[in-house]
Image 1 (cartoon, rainbow, N blue to C red):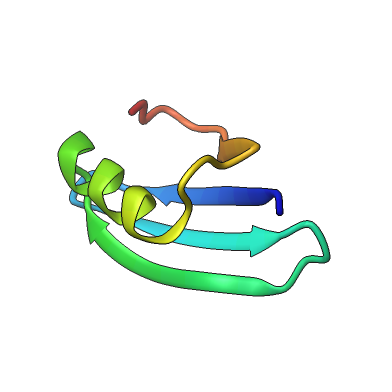
Image 2 (image 1 turned 30 degrees about the vertical axis):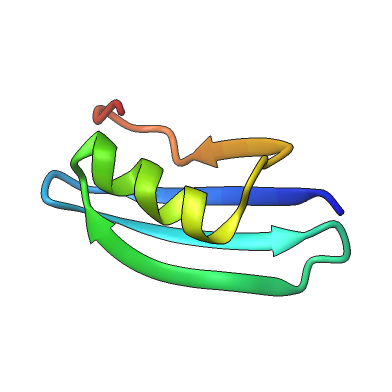
Length: 61
């Protein structure tokens, strides 16, 4: 089953939503903007996401 991840990035935190191929929400939450924290959230909820996308803006991961 394919998983897709959306990120809403801010300076101190990242909101994360994971959906399946049918658009059903599998997990959502917020973590710190630390790359290790983001990776930990993803490894707990989406083993191998098909795509990871984030809003356009001035912040980068």
